[in-house]
Image (cartoon, rainbow over all chains, first blue to last red; front, side, top):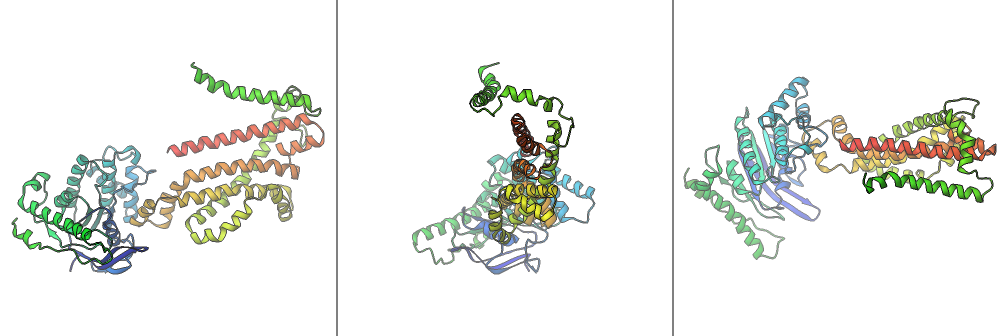
Amino acid sequence: MAFIEASGLAKSFGARHVLDRVSITVDKGEFVSIVGFMGCGKSTLLNLLSGVTEPDSGTISIDGTALQGIARQASIVFQNYSLLPWFSALENVRLAVDAARPGWTRAEQKEQSERYLQLVGLGNAMHRRPSQLSGGMRQRVAIARAFATDPEVLFLDEPFGALDALTRGSLQQELARLCSEAGRPVTTVMITNNIDEALLLSDRIIPMTKGPRATLGSPVAVDLAKPRSADQLAHDEHAILARAHVVECLSDHLHASRARPDRTRHEPPPSFSSVAVEKAGI
Amino acid sequence: MNLKRLGHFCLPLIGIAFAGVAWWFASTQVTDLPSPLKTWEESKLYLLEPWAKRGEMDQGMGLLAYYSLVRVAYGFSLGILIGTPLGFLLGVSGTMHRMLDPVIQILRPISPLAWLPLGLVLFQKSEPAALFAIAVCSMWPTVLNTMAGVRAIPQDYWNIAKVLRLSRFTTFTKIVLPAALPQMFTGFRLSLGIAWLVIVAAEMLTGTPGVGGFLWQEYNSLIYSHILLAILTIGIVGFLLDRMMGLAEARLRAL
């Protein structure tokens, strides 16, 4: 049984049907990326999976129990950092640790928070406020906050979307390292519009068609050993193929929806076989 | 010193000088209005011996202002003690807001002069009636600004509380309160201004010692220069109070 199981999810905002009959499963310890265009409903889907918003219909279960409110043992990283400006980096992390570990002593809570800030390279900046930190450093704080509660599930909503290319690259590597170094398998769902980012980090990539009534395309498995490097992805045959498939799926659907003016009834997007990707070799 | 800095320093003084000249000119036209110089001559005793106590109303200006300030402090504290929680309630709960907004909009424009007799009916004594009038008049800016501050909290911050599964108490102390604090303080500042306006009216009506009480008694004793002394004192003390709150507010926003 999959760790995260969601089926038949639908969500509308007023008359706008953002999601319609979306199903997804994620195995324990798996890193899944959902890739799609801006505004296709990716964030809405992630908010449903993490329990931030409730679906109009459909079911979600995590580790066998139906989701109610925010998933227990889940951490969420948002694109806009979501740090509290009146607290220092340390206090922001502590807010999460204190809430998740009420049984710990204050010293233990503080030590845990400091440890994770050191892990993301903010050992010297932990007493600064978000306004005194760069965008990359702020997102490091948010990542430290997410990992400091020892989550079993991690939801990442375009975590590197607001960062410049260089910062983005180093933070992606950092995230991969934190995931692999965590004491237990961390099941991760990441939302992104950057295919290279998805290839770098994911076990499986799921393309998402453009909304309204967005649905998910067939997943593409990325069977490459981790950690991966951007250089490796640029030359590896398997990676190139996987990339091509995701691009193809996204653009196919884009053409299809352009060709057909009637946007109210969408058939499932043209699916393609992920077998081809797996055959292409490891 | 360049011209601009000189202007910063001199222009306010020139403005005050103009006001003084206008006062002097008015005094030459109206027989009962004392000139600035005559006002100073007749009231310098109250300023040079600010802490002297000669009778119930016949006291130094410092002492009279002190009585008024103490009264304002009590009334204002009472006002924000009631106003702040009310503001939070209205900010968080849409139901409460819809229910109480009409009541507030009707109570808000009522003059302190109208509240005071009601206070006297309710409490029988002048001192609690004055506090009642100050509290009930000055609390509205605090209520409305606290409410607006809470309502303006970005969804992001509520999401943090939700995602981190913070308790209600922690959400309030760590997120709602700090987020609304700057605007709450703007409300406090406006409330203090109103409380100072009300105190004069309250003292005039109840005849209790203080700047307002002094003003009314000197009017009844036909010592007009002391009216002007009291008016100027009220203005200057009010200005200083607002400046103090302004400085505190600026420090708060800089955090």
